[in-house]
Image 1: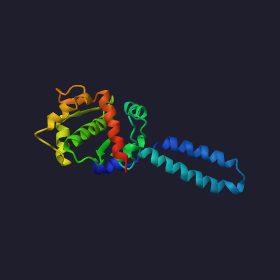
Image 2: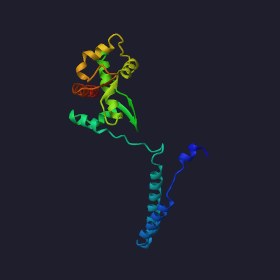
Image 3: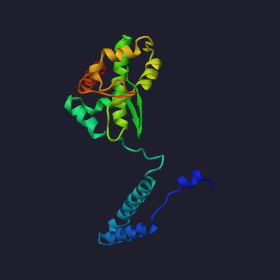
Image 4: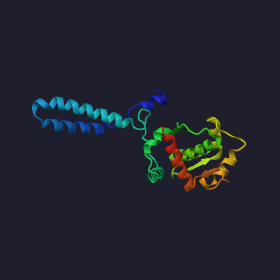
Length: 193
């Protein structure tokens, strides 16, 4: 048997299952005669289904729920933005996050700043503790992918918007309070249809 097949095997606690079935039998014995068999069959089926689902937790078939970090929740609360916007900005499955937003601006300088801000939000969703930050090279690559890279003015665009960031001399840049405020504005702009 391959290791992949072994991972798909269910590991059921039969001692616990036996105890639960015995409790079920005891329960149905106290019912009127005509209800015993159908009740037993229904409850046994439910018990077995629950046991199989419970033992499958952690396997590929069960998706892990994404939990929004508290700092991101606080950000949404502070700027009165619904957490549901995350589904419009990112595709989130388990711990994987991919941007799906569409920028409305056609100006490269503005698009670069919006990408930096949204990348900071994406990183805050991924990091523990949450930190609204981005790597300049990651933003450069994303700008290239989205067709808004301006090589001659890339760093100048950041410097012209320095109030949005804490330390532009670092490769990893954190948003300032003004940067978070601008991020909230960008989110609302993207959400306008």
